[in-house]
Amino acid sequence: MRNQAWANYVKDKRKARGLTRRKLAELAGIDPSYVTLIERDGYVPRKDKVLEVARALEAEVDHTLLVAGYAPEKIPVKDLLERLETFKSEKVLDKELRASIRELFDLTTAQQKKVSEMLTAYVKTLKDQKKARAAARVTRSGRGTGLQA
Image (tube, rainbow, N blue to C red; front, side):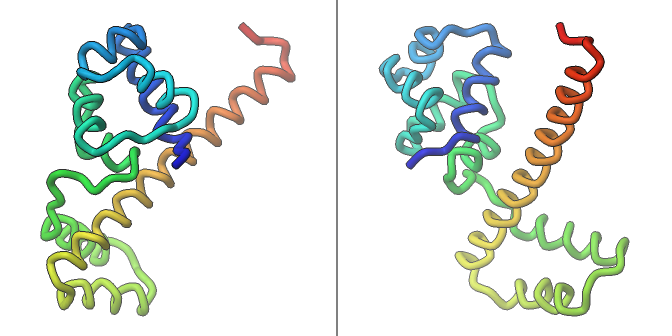
């Protein structure tokens, strides 16, 4: 499975920590070729290896797992539902969405966990897209003014 968001995430975190691919592999206890596959091809290793990469990068584990496409270690379903209820009271939500939120309480724990994973990944994706669009606007505006570095 190719996951470009995962590839970019690992590469950005690695560079931010000033690590070489070889050093990251050493810290994570994985073969250096894994790091190359991750960053170049978006290769997603087994969950245990993703956890090791997260620890080596000193990155937030649950977020790293989500970017890699895995379920987080700890999903505070009740916290998520409480936050949704708070959001509901702060903003006017569509009647259908409010009904859907209420239905979450009737789901099994496993179903709630899946919904939580999807919502967390969705919100993260929206934030990443917003950042990417903002960066693209800055890049485009810099080209037109001759202010490129």
